[in-house]
Length: 378
Image 1 (cartoon, rainbow, N blue to C red):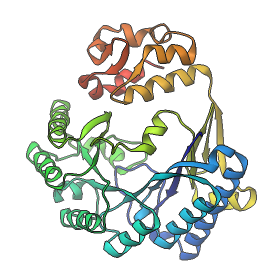
Image 2: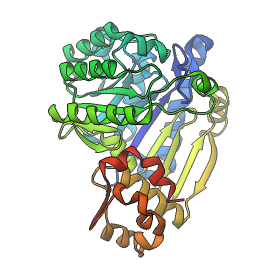
Image 3: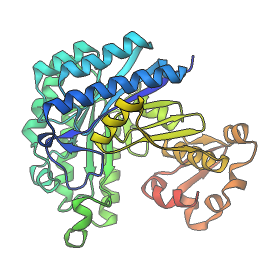
């Protein structure tokens, strides 16, 4: 049975972080009536696609992302889950993830969400250091993270992921060591580790000339320190930015990297099926209007060429620690990866980045230079 991932985009945030380019809006700028309208649009969009494409009526993972899904009323999350369960074939033991901001949720709501079927929490920590959180424009502080994490454990969540960020202006070796000590203390099942990227349209991008980022050698040291700490906890890399204890790898993200079908609901959400990808309009009001008129809110559709499929396959597989087999590529495309991407395999300065045996994968140094490696695919 072919199973699909289901992503639900909840775009509401308490504040706009200066580094974030995700599709979001301040919750204070929308009315309660519009939140109800957005909820109805999500439900109607789900009905449209599960009727139009039969593969989307068989669900293997559900992921509530944002924005800040933990701001969303728990009864609305329950309504979505109940609607999906009543109209789809849902895999037993399905992974259901909710992204959580530490200051937006406490034990009673966590209890309700766990009872509703959420079984994995992705906690947006970014840093345990208050000066770094302030620099990132976050409104939570270390005490909020620790309280929220304790609440997650108290209500019985056995699968908790932490988001951490390095390369932040003002981040020092000492501050990063303290972050890693907190990870050791909490001992989560999963960590997502991100290097701060300057994204166009963000406040950090506009102020980039006045910000002082840790130099690249120090950032490399941050990454290697994190690897060592995670390894001591049995939290091992399975993708460039993701680390997990055995059996706790994100199923939803893994399916996306493996190019399995997924359906994205909500403003700006993307979907993928076979050789087709489509993306919804980003404006919340335009999204709601389109759903009310047509049942879908598709802004653009792309039919992937064979070349694009090859590029995406190699790039996504190389993101994973295990990479891909040469024979796997040849079976899928009827050609050899080294013939299709000669510069990737032959560029002398990139050879230390790539293991080139029967299985093609990035080395540790290659993971640090992954963006440069991936440029050779285009």
